[in-house]
Image (cartoon, rainbow, N blue to C red; front, side, top):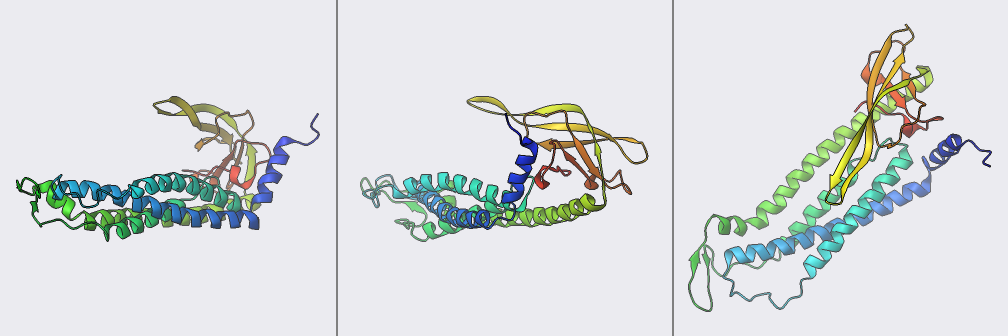
Amino acid sequence: MNTVDPAQARRARLEHWRGHPGVLAGAIVASAALLVFAFSAGYGFGGILEQFRTMAIDSVFDDRGDGEPPYEAIWGTFGLLGTIAAGALAGTAVRRYQGRPKSPAFPAVLAMAATTVGLWVSSLGWLPPLAVGIAVDPVFHTDEKWGFWGWAMYYADWWAPAGLLVLTVLALVHAVKATREYAEMVRTRERLLTYGRRVRGEVVEVKPRIAGDESGSRVVGATVTVAFFDTAGVRRWVTRRTSETSIAGFVEVLFDPVRPGDEKSIFVALRREPALSDWLPTD
């Protein structure tokens, strides 16, 4: 028989890891590993892209580089798998360290930046064409002029890294915006936990969120609609997305009694004894 409330034990465990230096060290190590793996993935992708480039700008009888083992593709594959694993670990560590309701966006920015650098470094060593504008056939001498695809792949050492750089900048802008929104949400949540009103709510609707692939479909979370009464006795409804797949009967709502209709000032907790990360803000 357990004599400790599981909800209190869970909250104590989450609060223990929040701000823990060991979790911060894990986030730093995982982020460093993410940079290494993502660089390897970008470098490997560059090696694969070089093969397509060579086939487009040179004849199939151009045997330069045929004797080299495909190390780029191998390291690129390991780099991609490592990037996914390290990114998940870094995001989870930061989420636990800060007590966030979901992982931050910065691991994706780090991964894209390192991938861009890896692709650019790879492009510096790509083989030049035997002749610009002509796919030279050194065996049968049936040379062919480049078409659109040939010219496009000839300049791949420019547009491929540049394209990834643009995507990295866009991801950085999104991450900065998300960070500012998170900081504002934290300030609002802290203010409401001190001066706001907490009331019991009622789950009136639960819509499961389904994700599927070739192995089948599975439930990845839910969209929950909660009803509650504000300090004036007005019944209100809010909808929140959660990664929880099973919703219990208990729900608590935290809101601003001065502005009960402000969506950004309403937080919902679907657990008893909620930790900071359990308070769900508006999307």
